[in-house]
Image (cartoon, rainbow, N blue to C red):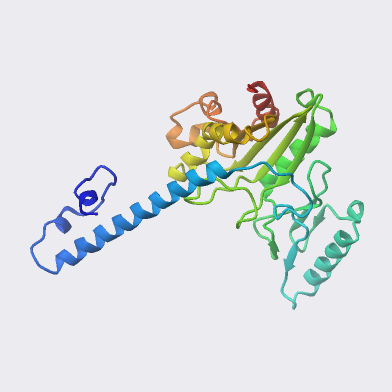
Length: 296
């Protein structure tokens, strides 16, 4: 520990200079607490790095089935029991879903601020989405408008038999959080919103797709973008068990390129790192095209 503290190449310390100018004995306790915080952070990062290395060697390929914890079997809706109309609408929605009457579901439940997405591309249905001013609590977390755009965009490509999907089958699942879904970077638990499967003969292309805003581009956002390249090491390990698996990771940015990280890079430059832009009409077609073009 002493040798570690004698080196300053592993941390950056932001403090007013006067705090390092010790003139009283009690100030030593402040410096001791700073050193303790640094050592604690170092130990935590060291443990997480070793854990990731161990997990990397233990990755295995399994078949996704109906009982998988990442496959939602139900929604839990919570409303104020004094709001009679909300209770009535929630009950009506719950009844239709339980009975499998998906064709009878409304597209929009105005009082609940809930919309329903009926798509055959998804592993389960229906999917619920909400506006920001929703008046109901839903678990698992429902889709927001941008996630809804992704689901409906993939559904449209599949339904129209778009050229990018010729000879392939498309499947989609919402990736859950809280230990049930697939995550990366144990440092902060990154769960991409969607997992897309493109089945092409014996090949399975697994795409981790995450629509998100990048206006605040910090360390966490940088790591999420870097997954586009880093996932190659995970794929290499998984292909020892199944040589027909291909892994890709993409960010679908809600933020224009001019507003990411001070506008330092063009949209084409970002795409080299797997960042595509939802405001481009053929965004999803571009992502699928890239995933299929880069098959080794």
